[in-house]
Length: 107
Image 1 (tube, rainbow, N blue to C red):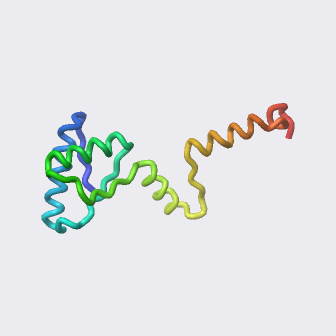
Image 2: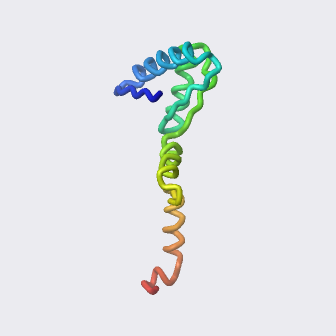
Image 3: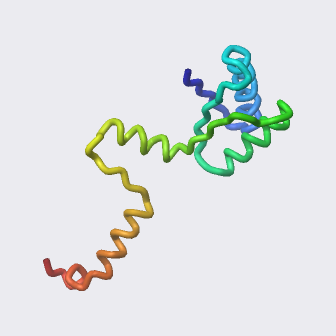
């Protein structure tokens, strides 16, 4: 089940996450993985440290980064499409800028 919590205080979000995680583990068992989507590694570290502080251990958290999740969703929506990230776009632009025909305006 997807649960969304909104707050501008990270402490409140962490408390809500720990409560929901403990409730989920009571229902599904202690070895069931808890899936979490976070925007970046800093939030992942904050989350893991907070869970460990609150529960004594932060085990069996399956963390996915938001960008990776969105890429998977896009690929499932458009199976023949191509998902690119900022590094790929930057590489293609640099290749174009180094192409003499492109820089001279010729085709």
